[in-house]
Image (cartoon, rainbow, N blue to C red; front, side, top):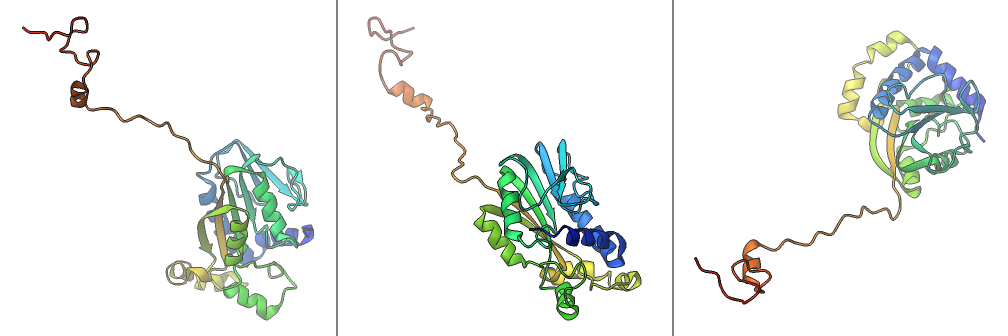
Length: 253
């Protein structure tokens, strides 16, 4: 089962702590860009209902599901109350970090997606300075108690569920420092890290597409047109415009 209290504490940390606000700004910019050009009829954000990560999307119906708080749908993300193949876009902001059933949460997201629907996930990268701090200080507080699922494992899970990896983004290169002035001193890491060590970012964002097995585009089979010269030579009174069909005599001026 999911731990609603743990996700709620993480949401509060994003809104209140200096480091949380820094991370929230990074992830908001990522989601704003990632969802902007996704079209369809229904979109769903799972978790972190205090923050609207679907704000820049133009899909007409946008829902919010979470285990607690004030979402539109109160449910366990591991058991979604939506029909299979009913949603065009599902986003999981750290939805795999704060659950004891990350693979089940991912499986449910795949189930409710329509073919060619999109799934967008963010998660903490254990191979980063954020992962190092988690190892050094322990996992008692948020956000360090999260699962920190590695990116290769996420890609393996997506492949098993026939979700095709489309794009990966990285964010939060600055060291996870508590004070705002310390974070400001390391701001240069955002541009430097993206160029020099992108895989060492504190957070990754993954976009995947649900592919339908056996789905194939059927196109008409056009018969090749015969060249005009070939039609003249092909013979047959009914095809030669220079031959009279009644008496087979050639017309002359």
